[in-house]
Amino acid sequence: MIDQALPALLAGLAAGLAIAMPLGAIGVLILREAILNGLRHGAAAGAGVAFVDLIYCTLAVSVGVVFAPVIRSWGAVPAVISGLVLIGLGVHQFVRGRSSAATEPGEVPKRDVFGRFVALTAINPATLLYFLALASVVTTTASSWLAPAAFVLGTGMASLAWQLGLAVVGARVGAMLPARVVGMLGWVASAVIILLGISVIVVGLTSVPIVSG
Image 1: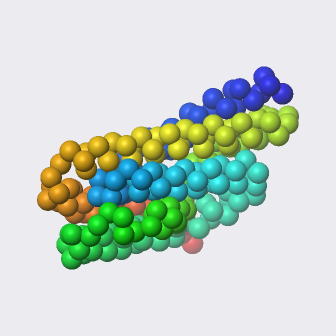
Image 2: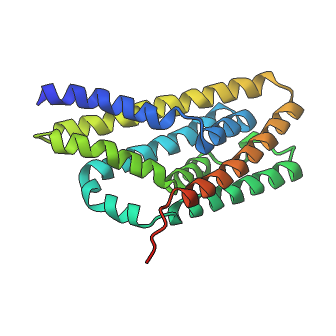
């Protein structure tokens, strides 16, 4: 059992880093949160993302075989919904940033930041599909519950460590720069989110095969 747990733990660490390290929409949002509102808010955002990674990985190793074909059958619908949400969020943050540049960092409770990032990460179908693909290998080769549990633990640890690292970087950048520059970076990040949302929709639509007849 222990012989299976250690490789599964290492595989989980690798899987968590692989899904977390590419700087996509969520990573940009964590940086933005930390730059504008400080380390505590950035850490709350990162914890929300890591929490969803942990839940999705748990679902993947437990019932992934059943749900994988269902999710794939939805085609481009999840990607379009995710892209529209990202575009709406980017527009909202851009408008809010322009109209409330003097907002104090502590006005938004950290629990609200955590919940917002849980919701944003949960609507990303690519995250769940990624874990379904990896976890299927773990569940089919494991002879006990220990290996899947170690895989989930490793994934959660790696994701949390990376997201908190982004929060630290964002907070340091925010502390070093003048308030006006920090505000401009927030607008740039909002524009990046809008562009990422558009790209998610385009990729989702173009990658779905057209079935004729």
